[in-house]
Image (cartoon, rainbow, N blue to C red; front, side, top):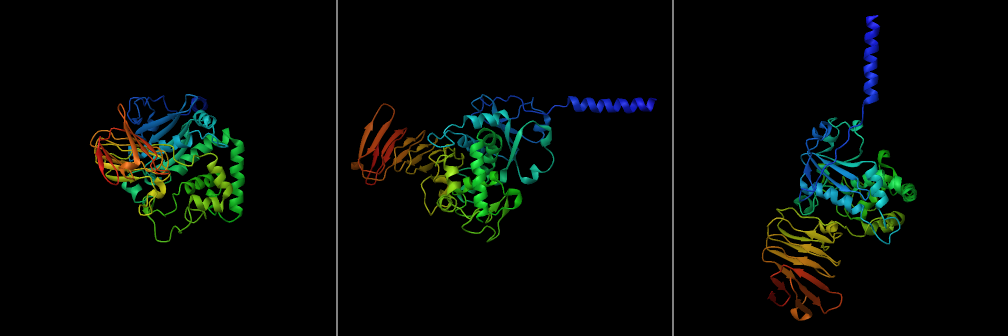
Length: 408
């Protein structure tokens, strides 16, 4: 009888545990006190998270709910910001586009599902079993530290690491946001994937031969990330020929550039360009130790400009002397506490010099411009057509023209 009672008692305890067990979730975490919006996980965070992750950030959807980022210890703030910037870019409304004109429903769907980017140090860290995915109530998508590059880093400038950040963040958006909120759009992506696959232009392994992987690859190609092959993949040196030239993703995709995408997969190109802006909407803040000049104007002598040409705005940080070169878009270029040299290039640009002795550079002679000094800013207007446009300057001491320099 005692034995039966003992078995009954254990069974009741197990049943009670099953009934009362609740998925583990994240508490409300305030990031407002951090200059960059990245904070250590607070003390009231369940140990299931703090045993694995150290830092946290988020963006807030229009419905007021968060979309989370959890980062392990190898992730620098610059790389965390890169991942968050990409999500903000993807969710930025694109007026006039077919599917991206309002992304409120996508962002809200993600927040309702507690969408979370889990930023692991490596694939090995993600697969170690330390983090129990099944115990949480979050919609998870992983990204490794050693497959992410931050603008202005040596890795980025030398195009070393295969940058998977755009692909993986889009996976989260598509899985938790686009599929539930924009089913018609997802259906078009599914049809385009099947057509591209059946034409023999998309040949990934079966595990990746699906509409979600396909659409993320086409975004990578649209951003020209594969025009030149990377040198490392997840920290491993790539062997010569391992990534066939003129293709993307280990030869799985016959398109490797925006121009080639339009030619090889016009429907895929349409579906990317009807949801995404033609340029990157976020403003990267370059690392504080960055020196030299960072260009967002395409220059075949600078390997990274295949990627950076799609930016419109850039900011320096720290106090190193450094420069920025804009492109033909309307750029916002922001200096740091050092001596900066900023060149807006074509288009109507906004240049902010900051502290230090700062120089604004122009392509023509001083006689080609009308210069007006206002209260707190300077306007420099190019008389020539299709040239430097009208630039709004704050915090500059020197204007450098082709023929002379003028002090303000």
